[in-house]
Figure 1 (tube, rainbow, N blue to C red):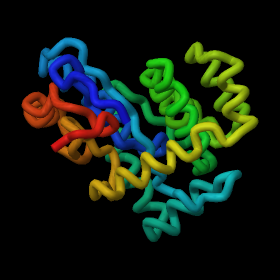
Figure 2 (spheres, rainbow, N blue to C red):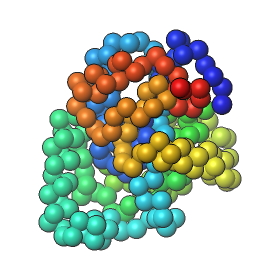
Figure 3 (tube, one colour):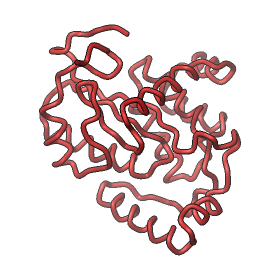
Length: 226
C-alpha cells in the first residue's frame, strides 16, 4: 500500500453491500453530508461487505428468505414500509415488489473494485443500487452486471476479463477481512482517517458533524493511519 499526502487527499470510505437498502439511503445522505461539510475534493471509496457471504452462486428466493429471517411476511413488509418512507425522503422510490431473488454479491463487489481502478465507482454503485432496488434486476447475474458496466462506461475489455477470470476476487475478500478486523458488523459503516467513525444511514447533519473533523487524514488503504 502506498502512503499518500494526507493534506492533499480527503477520503471517505463506505463499507457497504449492494443489497442493503440502508446503504442506498446512506449514499444519498452521505452526498448531502459532504455538501454540508463544504470541503472540496473529497473522494468516496466503496468497500466490500457481503451480508450473505454463503449465498449460492445463483442466489435464493427473497420472499422465503425474509419470511424465515423475520418470522412472518407481515413483519417483513412492516420493515420494508419503514425503509420505503426513509427512501422517499432521500429521493429513492424503492420497489421491493419487483425483487424476486437475493443475489450472491461477490461479482458485484468485484465490479465495484474494478471501477475503482478507473475512478468510476460512484456510477457503478449508483447503477447497481438502482438496478436492484428500483428495477428488480438480479445483480448476481453476470449478464446483468455486464449491462450495468456498459451503462457506467467501463471499458468492455476489462469487464470481459473480470468475468472470465478471478480478477479482483482476492482484493474484495481482503477488503471484507479488513472491515471485520476493524469491527465492522453492519453496513453502511463510514471510515475517515483510516478509522470507522460512524455506522448506519444517519441523517446528513449527523454524518457531516462526525465526518467533517475526520477528513483530511490518510485513508484505510493508504496505511500509516496512526
